[in-house]
Length: 544
Image (cartoon, rainbow, N blue to C red; front, side, top):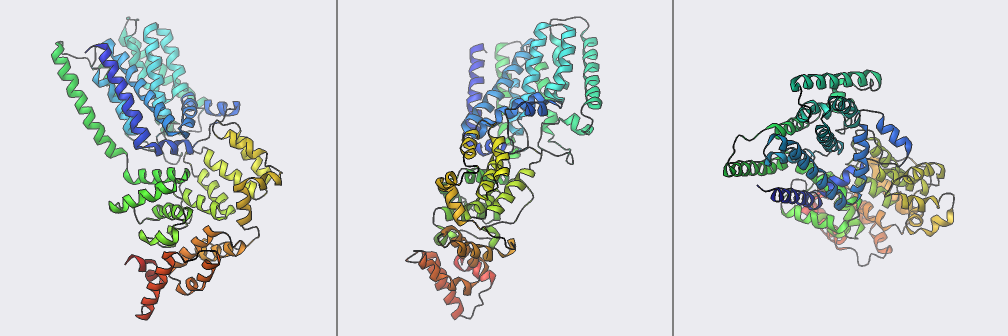
């Protein structure tokens, strides 16, 4: 196979990876960006570089901030995986190994990244190990290799363990077996020294698995098995020499390997990209971007396809918010299976994704303190204890609205040191202690007019009362009124629902939304038949 043709295949691979991330799974990229906050400060650099693998972690977080734009993130991942393939091939050529096998580590990394908790620092570490190994093999000096091994552990973390074998094919031909032993001793001594001198707070499983490869806490020490397999496949791709010398035989072998890996890639996608998790992350991505119409269209398609996600709390949280934001909640809510009041505003769930939609709903309704609490809890629920640009901004906004300018200033100062939140932070900084600036901001001005500004006993289990209080505070808050009426419908509280119909007319909903009228007629019919309007009846009457 000619060299140009091989580079063409690598280019095609990169294009496929770009299309895969840009068109199929962009929401996984934005999820990673949501769960970190890269700061251009010396303290941030020091904090990251203070643990083994810190340089790879710092470099990966620098790259992940560009995932704010999915197309940019897809391009970065495509270049990263293609570079890993090319570097694997560059090392493998010394052993006349199969070109097709050089794609195997990159394909497995592509599968592994279907786990949303796999951090970009892992493929970045693999890339750096391959690059350092290639440079050292060209230099071919034993002392250089030993120094490179010792330094690489602190740069990339535990994946440096494959370096002693990768370095044996350099220009230094003397006593390869002895050199491998020396390199292995240097690697083990480096890990032990670093563990006891600088990172003793980390348990051994975390040190060996990689401190910053996977989004986990010290209480959860397991990582996907594929993280152990990928370094082995790198060695396999490098050292698996081709015993076949004929050009046709080589072509057949490469073709068989290529077809096998393509089939394995499809199987890997189905195994590692969990449909339920992907659905949640996609929904989170759409809500974050305020893509309300896309959420509704997606819900209609999923309903037609009988997708099991339809009719779940998290699905309805986003759908009902999208319907409300497009003034369609009264008319279209019961066109989709509902799951009770938790399908409107869900109580807190202990993870860093599920309640992000509820946080957005609270913010737009005027429950600023609840939105602030959810934003804080969502950030603190990030498994590797990082900060979040999205949630930090929301906390800054909520404190600005509440007049807590000293607290807002803390969050705004952090965001000033970012790449994609700094423009907003500079504008928000002008609002500090400046009531006129806040009044001139359309969003801030409106939310201050609808937010509750007095103390009261808040109860998530009586949201109809909380929403009613919000409506009474500002009767022009149509979003709150729609949620209030929807809450009554889902509770089956027919009497309170009918009592508030005049309020709908007063809010210029004239004629009444078709959904209100239809529900009223159906409930009258049920009452005439002697059917009790309990919660089950109220939630299902329009769906029967």
